[in-house]
Amino acid sequence: MANKEKLFTEFTAPTTQEWLDKIEVDLKGADFQKRLVWRTNEGFNVQPFYRREDLANLKTPDALPGEFPFVRGNQKDTNVWYVRQNIVVNDAAEANKKALDILNKGIDSLGFKIPGKLVSKETVETLLNDIYCDCIEVNFSTCPKHSLELAEILVAFFAKKGYDKEKVVGSIAFDPMAKMVMKGKDVTPLLESGPKLVETLKEYPNFRCIAVSSDALNNAGAYIVQELGYALAWGNEYLQQLTDAGVDVDLAAKSIKFNMGVSENYFMEIAKFRAARLLWAQIVKQYEPKCDCACKMIINATTSTYNQTLFDSYVNLLRSQTEAMSAALGSVHSMVVTPFDAPYEEATDFSERIARNQQLIIKEESHFDRIVDPGAGSYYIEHLTDALATEAWKIFLKVEEEGGFLAALKAGTIQDDINATNVKRHGDAAKRKEFLLGTNQFPNFTEKSEGKKAVTACCCGTATDETCERPFKAIQSTRLAADFEDLRIHTEETKVPTAFMLTIGNLAMRQARAQFSCNFLACAGYKVIDNLGFKTVEEGVDAALEAKADIVVICSSDDEYAEYAIPAFQYLNGRAMFVVAGAPACMEDLKAAGIENYIHVKCNVLETLKEYNQKLGI
Figure 1 (cartoon, rainbow, N blue to C red):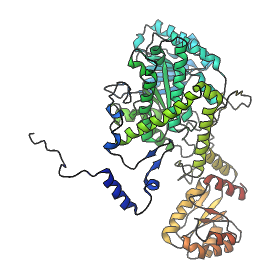
Figure 2: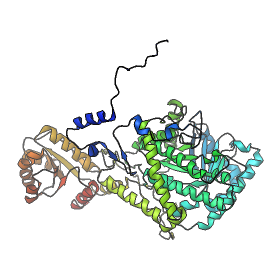
Figure 3: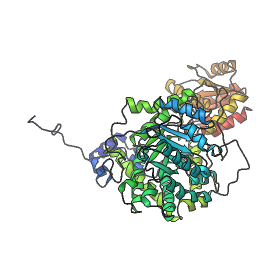
Figure 4: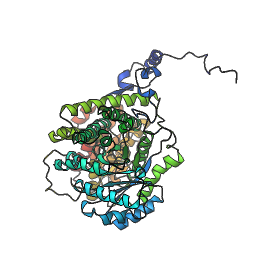
């Protein structure tokens, strides 16, 4: 068409200041910084809106897919990734049977976890029988003591099969430093196997053998920027060790694979993978490789277990689905979706099937594999990428100042940092500053554990063993929901109290507070009884006693508590625990009358419920 007039040219674009002025009016005097600016756990602020001018000084929007520094991904024209499922090998024949089965169900990447004692030529040949390793990705993990032996067996097997060495894609997860940082074990002598391992596999350019297992930090509660910063330092430590041992830098860099976690922070995780590639490319570049392709960061992403829950476990599907979307849009190399039942049982055929399909849905139905880096150019995602890169780089430099990753973990500073974050996050969950749907917020009132118990293991990955030696500090972590789950299971196994809502007065306030109180008390597994409302407190107390309530929660407005709370408390006369829903201005008067229990938004939910259990003899 000859007419190429742009749409909306008759409108003048508002300036940033005009937007801010309008927001100030709408806030009606409220503080802009407190109400609309998000101070992230990652150490930077997120504004309520972004404009093109915010990217003026950023270089990331100018990057191209498949080109240094690879912020937009390693591929130029596709966003395809490997759909991976891990298999624990206790019996090679059974593991092979399972692998062949799932290869027909959408999997194109296998991860075999082989106990060290089973590493042998016979195991590998049985395990890989009828599996074409030049058509799919094959990954292996075993005890670091046996990684070199496994590599030699695999090289011989690949040669026997006559595979094109360029087409063999996969990895061996040799990462002795993971045992040091996560379990406190001294395995420094094993680090000497790294260069030998690289040398053994050097003719297989797409088969990596040195792993950075930062997904373990993610599953221990690390914030996104902590996982990113420490992963970079971790990888740089291996790169330095390999080059110091005489390994060519291009070969060394191409031997390292990053296994990273994915948490529930959707946009932040997309930006994390972009920032990770950007920073790793810059790190490798300082070693002066012959080819920029050595600067590519290969990432296998695994959805988190830290935020998974035992109760309302199907919510785990929602968590892992958004996590998988973040990883896909962040252009990872491969991905593992953790089955939803992982907190309390060995994955079933059903849960593994659902986990596979979660990837297949976004890949084959939503076409996430078609567009390279769809977040590029987004003012918000570009800002997050830059901000995460800046903060992660600070962590990286701090570790380097301490002598590098190995020195820092021997000193325990990395473990202390992650452990402190884990403690803080558990505290935030107890106060509901961090939400876990179905656990500390909106629990299923009628759900029972039905014998579910959290899967536990010692630092060695076996049954609890107090004899484990830990010459270094270890990362101590439990899932974020564990404290609430333990409390709820204890209540269920001991005595389930009944909490009765004595709703009276202002309709809107009594309904809101009754709903709040039901959610609050159900977090400990209490049976809750809501009501439409009572005309008098005496009527409400009588109904509560008839229902054999252990707890009576009066729900009304702040102003009306001065009228209703004390008469209700006196009429109840100690026949059940009395609780006020809220923190009314007349609280001191109520306390003077003997009313000591209050639940409101500023409460530490976990500690309050533990206190109530104690008072009820549970």
